[in-house]
Image 1 (tube, rainbow, N blue to C red):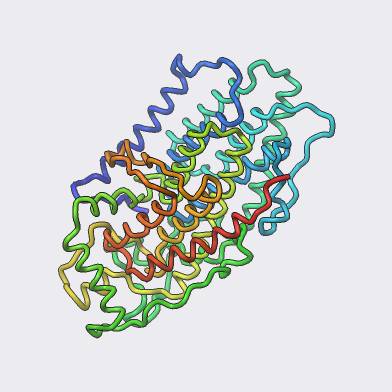
Image 2 (cartoon, helix red, strand yellow):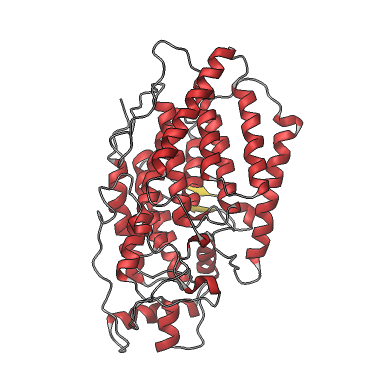
Length: 449
């Protein structure tokens, strides 16, 4: 997707910072502080790879939020299966996730090193899911692989190292081969179809950008991608939005008027909230990456081990990916007009929103569906009243925000789309409902032995 800018050119500055962050990452890999020492723990390997993956999402042009969520799901499953194969009180997700085959098994009685297994699995998985990232990203991934390979192999017998590396690679390959049949593996033209027939009627989506590529909507078929834990992409249907009407006093008009009135008197705090949760592609780790970042901080705060890391990231990745599949299915079934189109047509032709409207239909809100799902997964993992500080965008000059719980954060993320002028209230509230429904399937996965 093209670069988006907040008022004042913040977007271009963030794009430069993304490139700089990867350059700094590369420098740290070859600096003396990065020299190999004592063998790394498996959880340190996972933290390192997820740190780089968040940067690669920013750096890879095809990584719109749905595409990013898919990668996070398969990466989390890869890490989980690598850990589960070694015990750790975990059981495989094969047979639980849709069409997931049995994973390769370890040789009976053979010795494996867990950190080496996980490092090989994550290195190979990252290479698969970010094969089209830029040269700087490719160098950063290769550099991290070389560094972690040396540090995890410290003191490991050569035969154990070789066996462990081969096994980790086999897990990554098995998950990747399964991923190729889900309908989301190939992204052409950054996700915008070359041809697309707009549905007739004033209630249906119309392009909101003058950019030629965005005269068709992003990933209109994503709702047909194979789900992970949901039994189908339509497992969490929503009621229809308020009936379309341009009559003053109608429910639809009043929801549009709420967006219009709210955006005309935004407080500095509301503007900060809208920008904090905007999470634009190429300028951020995207919305699913934002919640991955929150999970990383929570896991770090409790000094979580590898099994805990793998379980949380697998559930969160699965729920996030299913959230976008379910949300996109509803979006293109309803195909509702965006606030900016309706308001300029029926209320004020000169109105503009704080944020740029994404190029796809209105109902429900993707941020809301995702955040509802992610918050439920993290609440199930860390508790109902887990207070935390979200510093995801600190380096982007957006100050950290404090939350009393994951659900509080999800509610703010959802409401941010009203402040940004991007969604009507029905899309926000029902998106949260859809996300909570979708999360239940990921939470129900049996991960313990």
